[in-house]
Amino acid sequence: MKRLGKELKNACGNCVQFLRWVALSSATGLVVGLVAVAFHEGIGTVTALRTMRPWLVWFLPLAGAAIVQLYRLCGMERDRGTNLVLVAVRDAEPMKLRTAPLIFICTILTHLVGGSAGREGAALQLGGSMASRAGHAIGLDEKDRRIMVMCGMAAAFSALFGTPITAALFAMEVVSVGVMYYAALVPCLCASLSGFLLARALGLHGLVGYAAGTPAALNVVSVLQTTALGALCALVAILFCVVMHGTHKLYERYIPNATVRAAVGGALVLALTLLSGGQLYNGAGDELARKLLDGQTIWYAFLLKILFTALTLGAGFRGGEIVPVLCVGCAFGTWMGPVLGLPHGFGGSLAMTAVFCGVTNCPITAICLSYELFGGQAVALYALCCAVSYMLSGYFGLYSEQKIMYSKFRAEWINTKAK
Image (cartoon, rainbow, N blue to C red; front, side, top):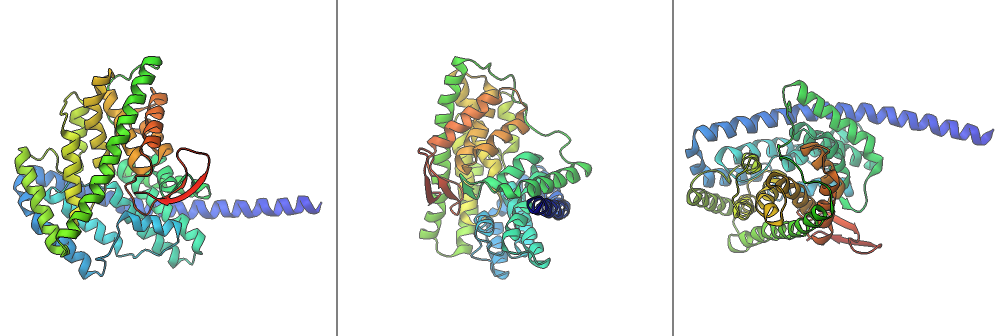
């Protein structure tokens, strides 16, 4: 009887915790989701404005300097971007609320002038900082504040990109590779779904995903082709990470002044824009990815997109890396896929998720992303391509504060930061 009473007491306690987290995470999802919708609309508005007035790219150097000065004015000149969100989850390090308006304004400014940056990485900072401060305000302890930060990350990502399952899993998986924060599963899903449903109710995400054409049939040949493509995607992922980190270090070494560095970076992106003959590689890269999936092939597009993105973000402009990564993968896959014998669009879609997997070290998230972007057909081939890319990309990663806890090659624990 004593044991039964203890179990009933535990069950009641679990139910209370469940209801508590459903309420907290859903509220977080609604609040963060509303801000993320405004962020989405802001980026859409300035992108359309730049399309109508392409001369705005001439303000790239000025905008870069302005962004650095804004962060300095707010005492955030040493801000570490998305890495700070990862530390907030792993070590319960508090985030400043001012991170949210700063990343909101500066990412929109980056898109207005044509910097090559995404929005989902910025959304992680936006949602994470808001949820972190909310956790402090309501008196949550250190462990619960970590879950709140993950809820904010999931809600902002989901509301902005329209992939609720991917958003929830990414928030849980990206911090410590090999260890998922399963205690955050229900809260992250509630926050992610709340943010997504709010965004959809406000007119976003009526159509989510990409048209990738007919997938290859699952057979021995397609398995071998997909394996080869996954291995090559691992090399592209490593290249992306090396160029991103290396460009930032080169900027700091040769241009110590942050304001001058941002202005020079803007000038370099402007020069590349003029040399490329248009603005195909500016912005996040979603439009370029859709054109490539529709049938175009530009074999060097993935290299140019890597260069544009590294020069933009390395100089101090603000924004995310995820959509540029997807664009890089798409450009590579639509070129290399047909070389290996895979359908054009299908090769592009495989590489999109595989390169994303290689740079983020998040295989479960990448597989779910393939499902939410391209549907359930050929999910086994998507999973295989992501798995191969994950393993062969080694311990490189986009986020330097990401810790790889479990070996990719042996059944053993390790503890290292992504390169």
